Length: 421
Image (cartoon, rainbow, N blue to C red):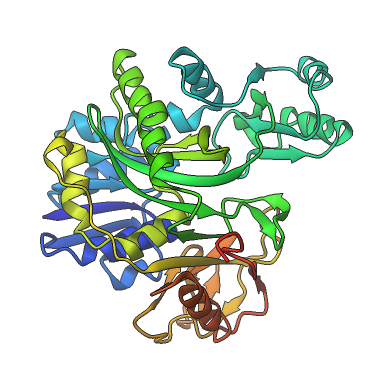
């Protein structure tokens, strides 16, 4: 098979790493890729939002399957464009991807189909939003409606901060993404990420993990796209998996089909779990980042047949995936200033050494300079990932690897997996 993988981050590096291991793959092409992914396949410098150029590349390499990593490409309609020329795509249509690209769409959908989630209201002006905030107890959850690279959510501890967040969002903090906002009740509990592969008819559970959204130790600081993950997460019991399938995933798949928007690809349910039940925090229309990294380390089965089955509507014929018994952990190494204003261009030394069989370093935001040196080129720059017989072993291996990397301009959380410990 010839496969085109779209994306340039840590999630896509992890997917490329796993896809490359498949005996079914003859040629792996990646656009735009990154320095780490260049070691695994042919890299083409095409933006993920340049749908016409990506479709042309897929046709040029006679792609049997296109795997879409980032949400931005899905929101631009890459799956629709590939479908129009008869190329199989792992990823939902532009309209189906609204489950991620519009929080208001998802909240309204959940209300119609009784998917358990937080109470909410949607607003297009600051005064109405601030009036609604007065009716709620603190803390306050304020979300930009559109895509904001994982950073469009504010958790405000008091009313003054919440009002300031509302003003900032309507003032253009996230551009068009925050021209509409959602304010919802604060949910307590423990978060988890559960994944399912979907083909419009069938939802096949495909792993779970726990992320750490706040920038700093102790779950403090601003929300980010994720500072680290681990899998398996003790909070996700078999009962939680069953409830998620029955109360959240299956009703969503049936509802999308009923609305004329059959969902294919991966559906990521971010949950808040309390008293043995989960409620939906958000949907993502792609593998989580950095959740994907630990899933790929733990996945024993060949990934490629599952991606193709989802794209071709044949998931009902697939067995449940097999997983390694070992635990996996991912620690995000981010640039100073992330998430608001990450410092770009600093030199990273030692990230490409051999850390041993149990450690993999995925590139998330790097670039190769003309002199061959590796430099930071994003907010989340490296993903230091490890597998171990136990979670403490995996965690220790990841942090030991970080200590061998020379990057003064980077920072990381030292408490990834504290709940599991």
